[in-house]
Length: 252
Image (cartoon, rainbow, N blue to C red; front, side, top):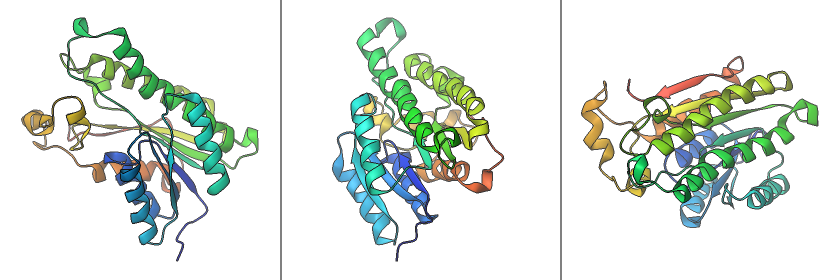
């Protein structure tokens, strides 16, 4: 039985970690979900299979969010198969190996900002074109996934990532004000040390364990704990909440 409620959600970077947990939880609450991935189709297809096995509606859709043409093609495929989205989770993002700023390259910075910032802006632009009442839409909800690094700065590890997430925080504030009268809410979740494989991609697979003593709660979080905050912000339960930030960071 299809449990969808007519709401359509796109989760970028939805094949693993926080994105996958968000896609699964949103589907349980009636969203039809488009699970975006860049290269790992197997992971995204597994999320889609899980959702469908539970009676939900989902599709996987490939696109590198740093490539505008791929994003436009992704939205066209979602439009054709699921309809115009009413929810967007800007979750796709990357870190890099830990380095001081004086060891980093411009090529690294461009990749960091192309994916983490420009990709989120392009996806949000396409979402607004579909959601806004000024464009004939019925409204919607955008949740940007930032990071506690935006507040902490990530010194000695990846200040470029922290700077990119700081841009996401500012973008959240500006867009929320811009579209508040057009039926669109824009909010942000800032995860702290969450036990996902993003840390291994930065060369620190044990980062959560190693830094847990610095967290007031003395443990890292898990993807499901972040997903619950994201899905709450997506839902009508939070219909008077916009331009807000939820830190899921154990007090750090």
